[in-house]
Length: 119
Image 1 (tube, helix red, strand yellow):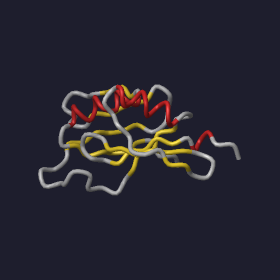
Image 2 (image 1 turned 90 degrees about the horizontal axis):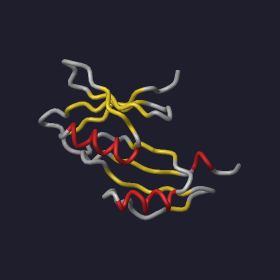
Image 3 (image 1 turned 60 degrees about the vertical axis):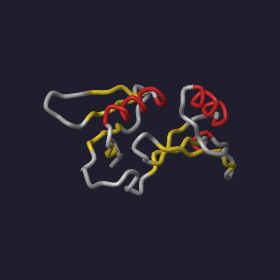
């Protein structure tokens, strides 16, 4: 069965929603009375469900990293930096590149060209 939804816990739900809308093209879907904001990507893939973190939950506590497929890691890093999202060093792996950052709730995120490598 495919993974269709991933829950991210956020201290500031709206800041986290804006982050994924701005940098990764998600669109927020809200249902009246529901405290979860579901983020849908018009290009497909799994939805992100932004859930308010419990008061005692530490930032970045979960051991999850979201990986977004991009064909050109360097170009994406440059565009993102201009919009306020700074990635760490670009790493060269086996036929692809990746770079890491964190969202406003300190959840680990990565961009990777692995899906576009020639095998």
